[in-house]
Image 1 (tube, helix red, strand yellow):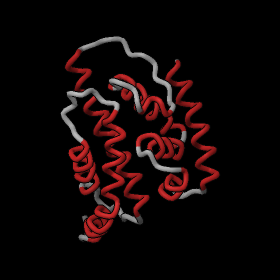
Image 2 (cartoon, one colour):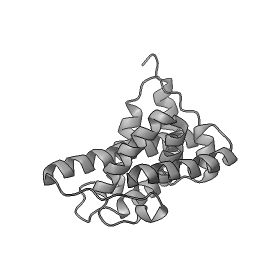
Image 3 (tube, rainbow, N blue to C red):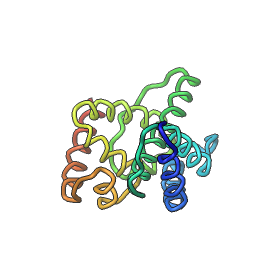
Image 4 (cartoon, rainbow, N blue to C red):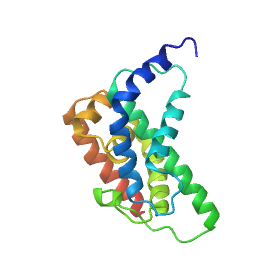
Length: 174
């Protein structure tokens, strides 16, 4: 890192979004198994550590932090799910659908892994669509918050969200 500006920006923005990050983490963990070793505060703090480790990021505003935190939480939860799957060694992967009910699903390790793999493929096709999914699905952000985080209009986010959901549903059905 060339100077402390990015660290100072994140430190200034983080307390303002902390409650929103806790709500985001709580939504993610609500559907996890009860024995999950990571709690709400732990997930927020792990996301913060990931964000603080990023070099050369200019933290623009709260929506930017929330969008990047959604991406970090996604990676953390996927890493936990992959580790859990490796521990279990197997089991059939069931197709997941991308709708709001998935957030409330019981044990979602396999669904999260399948969604993450599909989202990585979508990112290769259209990075903005993948960012919209991260903000909306993993971040629980509104259309307006997502538009600000992605740097586009709310109307574009609505269209992108529709297209991304259809693309991911087809990918998950395949």
